[in-house]
Length: 198
Image (cartoon, rainbow, N blue to C red; front, side):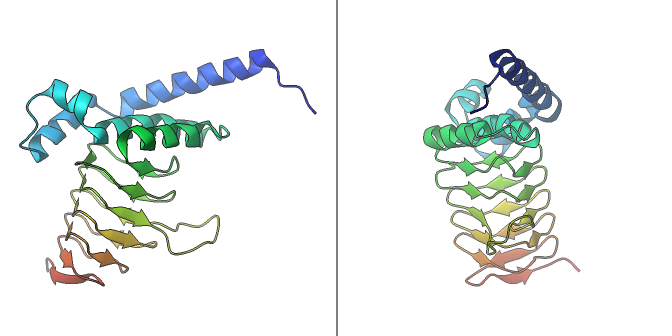
């Protein structure tokens, strides 16, 4: 069995941690994220309350670390961080998911975001939302892309490699299996578009 060089492993970990912190500083402006929570939740009383008591902000914080390590192809540790985050927040985000700035996960319990999901900026997600896949094939994009300024209602299931257009709203408990145009409102099982911009 090959020996592991402890010095090399330690140096690799320190580099990975430094990379993760640098990534968070550059791509996760904390103040803007806190303000996004306060804007979308009238119950938020203060920045400190949001920072300490809201599970969504913790889940995104841990995801930034796990995603940076995932990009470095660090074995096991990204998934361990993801599992720990799920344990304390009830929100499961695969380390491979790509998440933009100011993602607000309100309440959060039961949210699942799959490996190849992409979420752009200023998206609001309520509890019980699933961004899931319908294919078992490796090496392809299996999960949805959610464009900027979308709202995903509680319990919504968005499945497969589809796109939710910018500014769209998905109603609670809807099951969406087809792409949705920008500025649309989608409800039902399966999801159908009630309104869309022309």
